[in-house]
Length: 155
Image (cartoon, rainbow, N blue to C red; front, side, top):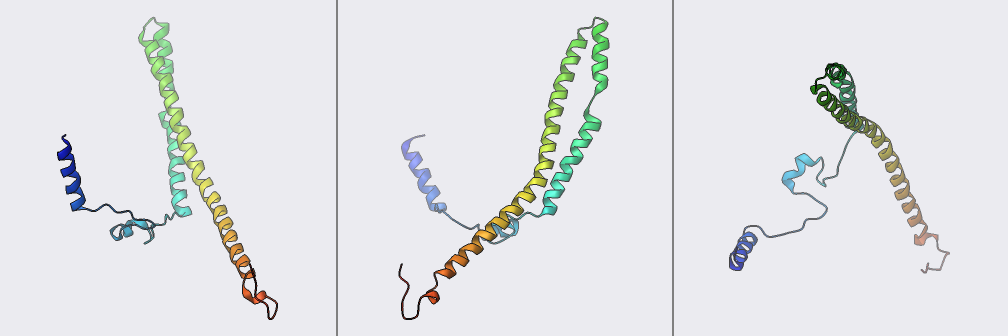
């Protein structure tokens, strides 16, 4: 691409839509999807519990339905009969078990994290509420109404 062509493309893009920065807000057309006009993220315990519950159900189904113990038996039988396929089948079985274990671990982490997230954020909310309320209490202490009669507070 030539330099002139690049400059033309930049000028065309700038003419079509000026570059802007928008802070602390989202475009009005996105408000219905954002939950609030300010775009604050909101999640309820019901939402978290539903995600955690589905992860727990998936974990249980994987444990019950995805483990294939008959593959190990078949691999052992084939090996004992001198078939090389037995070793290959054993290799596939080991890989499957590792992958299944990783997936089950991920499901367990998701399920546990959803329980933890709600409790942690409840604690955060209480901390923030206490912190903000203590600021207003401190601010009240700097109000001029506490000064001695006839004197003005000086800082």
